[in-house]
Length: 481
Image (cartoon, rainbow, N blue to C red):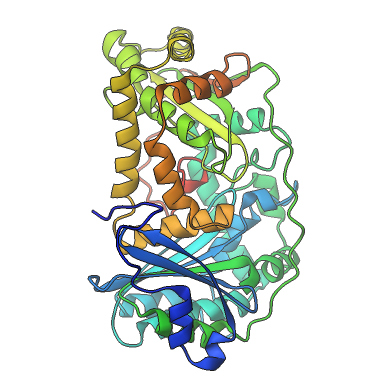
């Protein structure tokens, strides 16, 4: 396991200045070094090309593969009412033909080189990644392909109609035909009414159906440009070779004129809003939402540990109370916001038998109130804190996972160094921090509740394969990449 800290216990292997010094003079003149970030005994080097493209590199000589991520600072919050879903739809479009490569060439070419590929869209970002063997020519290949589809994508009615139908079917599968999808969507819409985090990343159906080629062209020319992108390269690579390759493939690409970044108004749930849906369920399903801080806020680590204490595994407070002791629920889970701006803390519970959602809600609120009033025990703090930190360690060990963490923090906050600092902050969360976070953000008077009640119909059981080839779990269920 690689120790992660904002202070390094060993000498940096490379620094941005050294990397530029080893590069060809013309390449060095085109990049500006950013401050180095200590990452265990290694150093993350970062650069900005003169066309605005950000580059983050972490070599790992022990690895036999490398991860290549392209993070665009555009997600569903950058859309506008009436055009929701275009960021996600465009993610699908990016796997279609370009002026250089025909339909299907991208996937076939990656498969021939033994690559793993994926993509995802969420509220603040869209990203594409490849993991390839460290064979000669693979870095040049993936850089040239990603640079090509950054500017040469073919957009026409045929391409749009094909991918629109895929997304429409995906929405039916994930929302219209899925009670959980409907409940979560209503929760977010109610809690974040009028806020760009409130509409679904997949988009409203009418908006998906109404997206035009002109909409796609405008979106592409605005957001898919080097000055709105970060490349993250982690693994068996040489930093100088990476910079020289990126300069050769991307250096000629023009910047775009980005819209001014306007911070959305702070979302407020004015009271205890409530909605009940009749759905094909075998038992009640309960969703609760509270407004939590953005990930850059000083309270974010404490709230994350608090949510872990309440919901994180078999020994968490709410699992013990609702599932083991009272046997009211068969499952309960949730997550804290992982967004640039304040977003939703989501808690979801499934009743053991119909008619018990009211009892579950009462016990859930009671347990949260108890934590807010009395705080956690020292043992609870240590355990929850360790669980959160160890999960981050486990999910950032491999090259692809590391690249995902770096890209996520850079795309969301504009600062890759926020990742190791977040680890340090989580390690320092104490009982008072947790009690304050719960009291501040999980107030019973400022929550949204959506309840699904069985309508007497048998729950739909579908063995249909998910045709989507990207990681859309991020849309409403995930946190950081």
